[in-house]
Length: 281
Image (cartoon, rainbow, N blue to C red; front, side, top):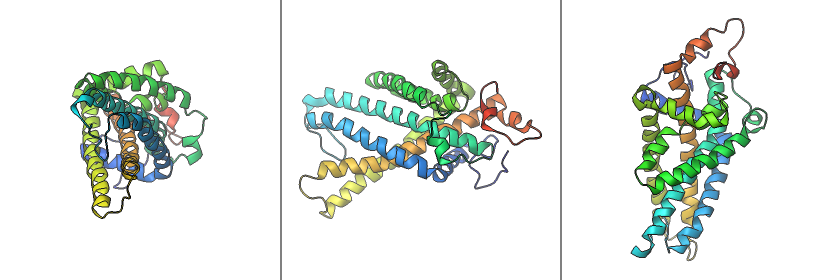
């Protein structure tokens, strides 16, 4: 196992809340070249997907409020669809983020090709689970407060799939089980991380657009495009960071509740490998 220290992504021991948030940022920094371009493509795609609904209700950036009270139903569906796409993007990014975190835990740095390649990456299962989780989150978001429960419990889907190597049909149930342990600690951490990054996103996205407008740098007809780009930019970092948080919280929860650190320390004669992280490995 890697030595502990202030620059170690995952020291291989139970961590405090602050240390977990730091670990997620360190993981993102160390694998930014992989995670951020992928996140950028997905974030731009999300903005394009939501644009027709925004246009239909006459909403304008940066906050995309509806033009009138008659569009509140459509606005509610827009919010629910946005929540679903967020969950799907974070889950998809969770695939390479989880494998990078697993490598960091055992003191190994997977190459970029390993994180994006097809060998053992389970991209097909990840895409399938994205659709399932997206549907669940869309329904939960339409029900209002149920979104909190759905988002809190589904953070470990990608890590369970690619680190624990469980079958896709078990990934969701294992994610829920892990999130519920220790009084729902992992679930609460995921909501905390989302809240922190939501405030950052709103502050930066709204602030960037307002600043450009104040300086009269947005020409007529380009306001919508600029607002979309501003949100895509801040979401790129936020989604990647939340995927990294899911990965480190997952491994730390297993250390606390399954003795994962003890298992890794009992591998004499050879360096630890990510295969040892699989459930039953």
